[in-house]
Image (cartoon, rainbow, N blue to C red; front, side, top):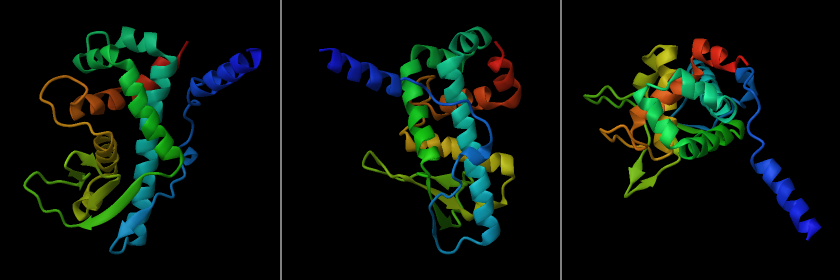
Length: 198
C-alpha cells in the first residue's frame, strides 16, 4: 500500500509540477519541420524566430496562470475575455500545456502553401476536415511580407486553431478572439513582468 501511495505521489508531483519560468526564446528548439516548395533561407530564419517568440508568449501565459492566478484575477477582474478564463481555468491550462509541449519538443509543423490571395487577406491557416483538425500550420506567401510582430500573432492565432478553437461570436471557449486576448495580455512585457512581482 505504501509503495502504491509512493508511486501515486511521485506521479502526481511530476504531473502537477508546472512549467519552468520562461527565460530566453532560445529555450524552444527553433528547428520546426518546414515543408513545401522551397523555403528561402531568409524566410526559414523568419519562421524560426516567429515560432520561438509565439511559443514564448504561450509559455508566459501558461506560467502566469499556473503561478500567479490570484494576481491575474485581481488585475483583470473586469475583463470580459478574462471572465471566460476564470470560468474555465482548467480548460485553458490544458490547451496551453499542449502548445507548450509541442513548442518544447519541436512539434510545430509548418508548410509553405504559396499565395493564398483571399479577400480576408489570409496569412496562414489550419485545415479542418469533417471536424478533424490537421496538425500543420500552412503559411501563405503573404505571411512573409507582414511585419514581424504581426507574423508572431498570426502564429499564436493558429496555435489556437490547432486546439480546435473556432469563431464563436460569443465570449466562450470556442472564440478564437478570447484565446488571443488571454495569451496576448498575459505575455505582453508590461503585464507579464508586473504580474511576476511577489
